[in-house]
Amino acid sequence: MNNILGIILTGGNSNNLGELSINRSSAAMPIGGKYRAIDFVLSNMVNSGVVSVGVITQYNFRSLMDHLGSGKEWDLDRRTKGLFIFPPFISPESNSWYRGSADALYNNLSFLRRSDEEYAIIAQGGNCIYKMDYTDMFDFHMQKDADITIVYREMTDFEPDDLKRLGIIQKDSDERLTDFQEKPLHPLSNNASIGIYIMKKSLLISLLEECVAHGDYDFVKDILIKKINSLKVYGYKFNGYWRSMCSVQLYYRTNMELLNPEIREELFKTGGKIFTKVKDETPAKYNYEAEVTNSIVGDGCIIEGIVQNSILFRGVTVNKGAVVKNSIIMQGSIIEDNAILVNTILDKNVQVTQGKSLKGEDNWPIIVGRKAIV
Image (cartoon, rainbow, N blue to C red):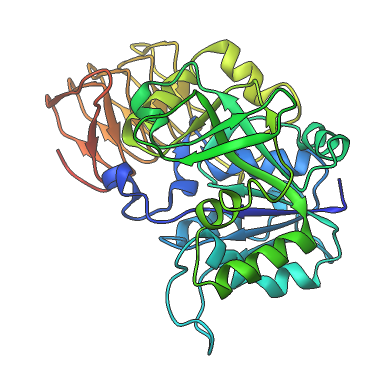
């Protein structure tokens, strides 16, 4: 696996996340009490033996770069290979934002050319939550003698509207793709690409040069879909837990599902750790009035009230008489005495004043933006 170059595309501007993505990219979304979304795909690569990883960023990348740093937490702070971060830049050939995923890769061709790995694995969208060993995918790719292998999953646990945000594939009995629909209005199946591709690096460079020469910029629409009949494109089936946090509803649902012990077991205990940036904090403090059930509570929290089925990030304070149910409370927020939060997402450093009540719906939570006072 050290003959494979890892590439993570952290995506464009995620308007579907509303206020949550004003100051951060979707790949930097906090999840599970102490993690960021990109931790999962990056840890998957490291656990699979990939030792050279490039992260191509675009919108709101400051918090993402601060989180990744030198890559020390993922053992990628190396003298050779390791972690490389590529934000947009101005050059004689390019003076604007990346116009698409293929354009983002093309503008970093020098990184591809100077790396000595023979293969490339591309993870499109650093905002996906899953645990996967890419070694099995690579073995499948070699066994099929494929030009490109795409990972797909049967989305039996997704709503029809959620499928419209995904790439839907059709395949024959040998797992070779026969059709690929990108975000169709009427999905023909529930087999969806999860945005992970593997191919020879030389083929990737050739496809990018051809794509941009024709004035095209999107990796899926202008490369994968157009080449599905002329290249041997196979689908590798992934059967595990997977969520893309591409909307407020899916972000809320994903965090709530982490309260399920079976999902936590799959994501955090089997197949290697999920690594993240380490913060040295004191343990959470529970006063004698505190009642906490089925919740994830981060370090540095002080709990005096009631917390049920919720996720609290570092340094959250829940005062006496306050009630927090089915909610996500991000770092540094304060819930004062007798406040009530139900189906609510608080961004960082929010203050909910004494006696206030916020109640959202099960699939439509209330969002309070960063540093707001309610």
